[in-house]
Image 1: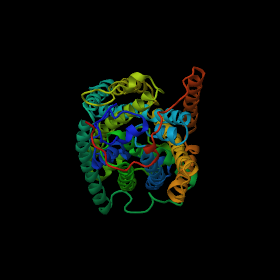
Image 2: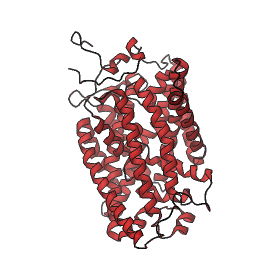
Image 3: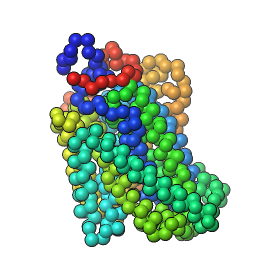
Image 4: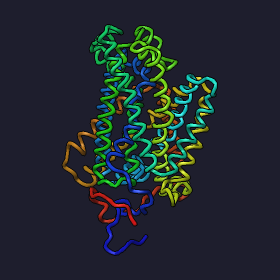
Length: 477
């Protein structure tokens, strides 16, 4: 690759890669992307499961989840400064520890990224079918997949513009629910104002709460997706980490407030604690108590659109970037590293994700446990990969480079690792078994690479790559 004399290399080129993706995203774009990925109204769809799992302390579960994810976000911020490239945990563990570890970390988080669009499409399609029964689930699912694929294929700027519109719509719906809900509580509906959603001495236990946290973190997954856009950000590297922390704080605050209000409006707390929420309607039932059928229908429709369009749109974009990063390193088929010359997006990876999401969604739609099965797999994959992220911070900064910044490079990752390990241990057994089976398959693939002489390797670093790259970058050309 040649450039005019005197023109500085972009950060990615210092690590032996070509700058192929479009560097056009601002800090606001990154922040909006992260918020859309997490979905400000995400608890609408899984509120009942978290409520039942936490003994009614749903706000506490989200608070602990936010704190746990904050340690992870701070570790991400350190690694994206050191290695400002697409690939997320795959890139950070691969360069921060060793390429084989990076492959396994990428393989594990792939369980999250490759499955989450299918999960989102399925949840949204089931919700839309309940609102419009004449249209079958498979038709809604196909429509969501096609729509999102077209938007993503048209380029990251198109995705960013759509994100802003969808975020505004979600925040308006959330504001309506909160205003109506608070007024209803003030009028004596529900249980009235109390601290019970944050702490209930009658049901509290750490294993119980952390078991619920393992479900609640599904709402937080997505802040890490901002790191996937490192090669498409025109900001300095540290701004990517700041966008992740800001998105997590904003979304976490919204999650805590909305679940607190909803918990106080649950019409039958005893039944929800005893029987759970198999139909996934607990939040809408609470909305009905607050404002009637119109509010229940509005929140259900908002959930369908947010999960099926807004969230799955950015999930598909992030997944395609992970496949792109692994493919250009030869750890996935090279075909997936192809970038569309006009729109500057990983075209083949985008189309593959769409195909997998469609097939997976249709298959899981035929199973009674499709949504719950996909949810547990997604959570386990993400949590396990985050463990590798924390280790990579300590290895890269403290062990390899002798950092004495004990807070950011040792204390934060160690505490984050311990919290996530406790969450993984308290996850559902089914998730643990299926997750370790997936990890075992990844180990077999890695051994196959070694047996065939294709051991994972990464392009050599230039001298400049050994220092954090915090300067703003310009679109080359």
